[in-house]
Length: 327
Length: 294
Image (cartoon, rainbow over the protein chains, first blue to last red):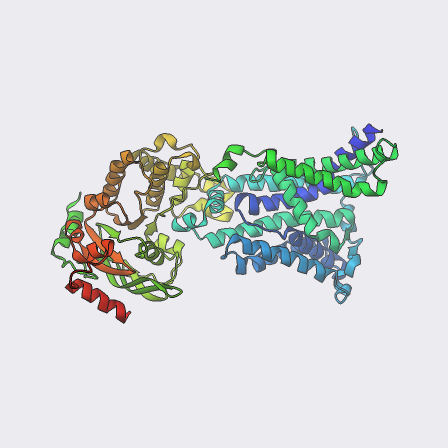
């Protein structure tokens, strides 16, 4: 078995494009769910409107990359307002229902045949991000130890990790401020916060918007890295993977989403590589090679379940804090 | 206690002992407040006034509507009809956080300590007009650092007087039930309210802590804050209240100083049930008649 190759693949994915996208999506969820207690099950919708905002601006309207990014951010803000205004006064469950439905409505709208001229139907929007690669400072592929990236991948991964760092610093600064104190208090008990003269609704709205905008940068990275916006990439799987990443790393921890995303993608690719290798070399003969893709998700799912049972606070969480919740 | 505050309590002496009676200097006036839950009338208060600067107890048997009345007054629940003013300001329909900002702050029957925040963070949360609570200012610590220090200083003074100072860095979830009650009261005082409403401050508190809690409530009044509290513990009611309002089946059925109210026939009936072997008393008949009108 070629362990060297398996590991270099796993490390590449663990710090690669997918890890960046999911780290950004999970940072947004961390603000919403981890700190504020908002159950946003439509994070994929925020990534989708950002990606399509960018893609449509550049490919259909001929606007520049920068205007496209602003359109994408504005779309995420508008989506947060649309989801928040009717639901944030209600119990937490309603936000969950509305967000998961809204994300699916968005995906189906983007892939609909009648809107094909704007959103490109199920083919999506492709090859629109050449502007971004014009600024690429890397002129050839980069190899660091066992990891190797093409010049374009290296450029987007660099920008991606810079964004992850900026977002994490922002979350750190927000959460140690009095604003963050109100946010965390809302997670503990909304009525107590109301009784102390704070507008819970306004704070929840701010958290929903900030989390959505932070997550939407994951949508930009996905769109630009793949030079392609596929509607089905923004399905509910994306949201649930982002939740898995967040809970794996540790919710309400600044570094939780980063650690979670790296471990998640490293683990997934490691399982995948090990199984494929074992199957091809005949070590495992009861699985066919085309079944490996499904089985790696079984193993991942079982691992997450075991994690929830034996370490529900995630890698970075504090069990003592979690156990207080039950009292 | 300053003389002007003493005067406010003494002024109650000449107030007639009847339900809905006018007070010399009311801070809160409620009129025709009604709340139905389906077919049940939980609250039906035609008129009640709370004297400024006093400790007023709101008592009554289980299901009398005391907590519901609290929820209505503080905006946590909406009445079917009715209006009330606080310091002359119309409060009907005002949202709970605005009510708190205006100066009427409540605590809860089931204590709402914010478990995963430290005791000190709980306290700081109570302070109003914090610059650092604005989204954009929050990431610029130099804008709010000095205010945060002032708030911390004030919180520490309060925590000391509530014997919680050495717990300031502990998570609130690790406190005992009685300590949480104290913390909740101290946190409410961080808002610097004109009136504090305590929903069963004694429930679940260790008897050893009772006396110090009573002292705290008195201190709050002596600093000029009006206190309204719901309580089942009659010893506490007798001990510290300047005036008692009795509710039963949603209505105010009696008012007066603690000793007189507890010997009031209507109150005893409400708690123990009417005496079937005796003809109805005047107050009992009045109650029945009023009930039928409603």
